[in-house]
Length: 213
Image (cartoon, rainbow, N blue to C red; front, side, top):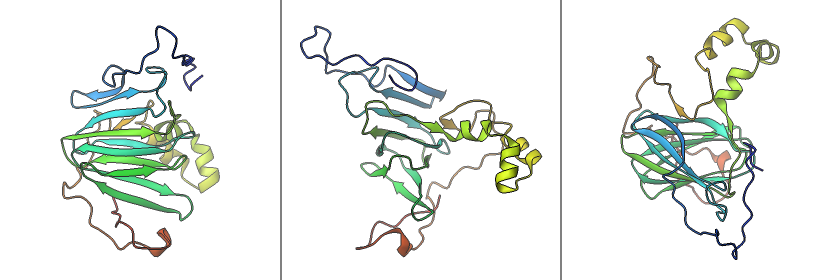
């Protein structure tokens, strides 16, 4: 069973209903507005699939909110537009950030906290997983559910200030910011400025230069 309690169909090639065809435009995962939406093709939609994926369209300033996957690694593949992907490396305690153009990819390891920001109005991307159906933990859930008193006890955060800060987060969401948000800043289409690659990020030959989002 998957995280929503849906039983995956057995894959039997001799079954008359057996199929190798799927349509990633039939199942809507989330629609923020007419220009920002995500479709999916996972095990429940196509039982024979081994690498499920999200099919996303985004406009400038829209973000796939911070989240992580407990059972799957992910590869972001950009079809059109430009995005910035950021992922927290728990081994170096640093955020690794990359600007992606069409044809470029970024790998997001299983369990690593990450997010994706659209820099242009024509973003079309796939996020492909090494599991038929990925589990996901949303930052929106973590932030709104954890008690303010716990944040105070753990980090000496003012509980009243924390509660007020996260009050706008009312439900699980994938695409942000909320339509009602009025204090957002648009990202620069030119993208973030490059910074030197910290030596602690890698061992060996030089790697692509990351960008701070």
